[in-house]
Image (cartoon, rainbow, N blue to C red; front, side, top):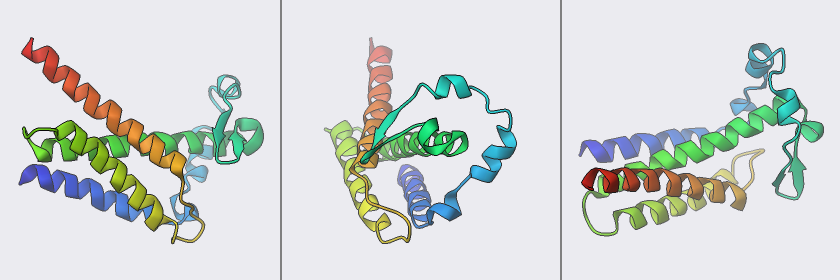
Length: 152
């Protein structure tokens, strides 16, 4: 039961965060204060990330918006990795726990993106679903690898 509660907690956090507008979620003021000296600007300026119909970069968005973009995508990756682990452990030692966790997380990501599209200023993004699924694959893969190594 405790494992299902942890999964439910992750899902509630997901629902709350994806119900917020971009303006409500923006951390630009905090980044401007914390990263006032623009650390790693030169290194980050080499990154050009294809996203939707554009390329996201410091040149295109500016330093703080670019860093926020990276944080947002990292949050997708980690958040959905945690959801996948929640599904994986809640499913228990039954067969296909990894498959259920990964496909379940992908389904949750698709449904969340769809629901998010009704939030003002937010869009549905297949690329976010891909990042979410990658997080699920990596997190579940690491747990499976650790379990396999421990058995050996």
